[in-house]
Image (tube, rainbow, N blue to C red; front, side, top):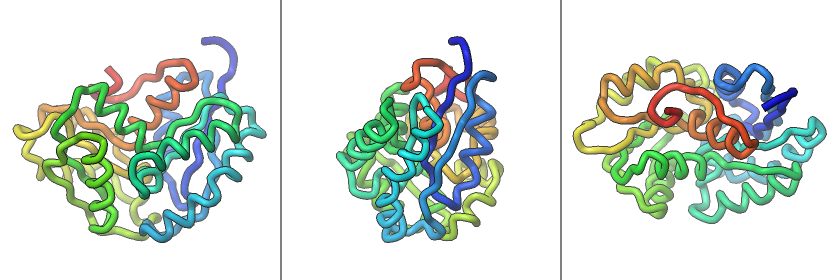
Length: 232
């Protein structure tokens, strides 16, 4: 890889984690640029409304000549089940004239990479979104052994969580019963705790941002380094 490379991410307006985490794990010659869709509360209705702005946001990123773009929102990309995620990727790809990934499919690809069958999921979400996430993952062929959330709807509050909060959540997982633990939400700062969580659990831990970033870099044609079994 030579020269300067640009990656794009379409994120909720209240997301404060993607811009903190992505740049830490891309090569020095890669910059990350974002465009924001309006969202304050992480509810099904608000996420559904937010997706109406995805093409507009992607077109704005095309002005920066990004080489690939991500729809960096987990529940926003799985809200309507399998198929909606691929539609998002196709819409973004057309808007920027290059490859695109959506977080829900990025997570699916990460789980396939790790040959996962039985998974535990930890989220900051309310019960309705947890149920939607379970349905999506089970439709994709995974057995969701457990899923639990923090019940937070204010996305600014989610962004104020720490990797320690994520580590405390995964402490409740019986790792003897799962292949992978998935910590969901692109606004949940988690990447710096992945290796310590894996050490404690003895199984791979993937996060929304880790899966999305790895998928985005590969779509753009280069590798990136990151924490944990997924990046290895």
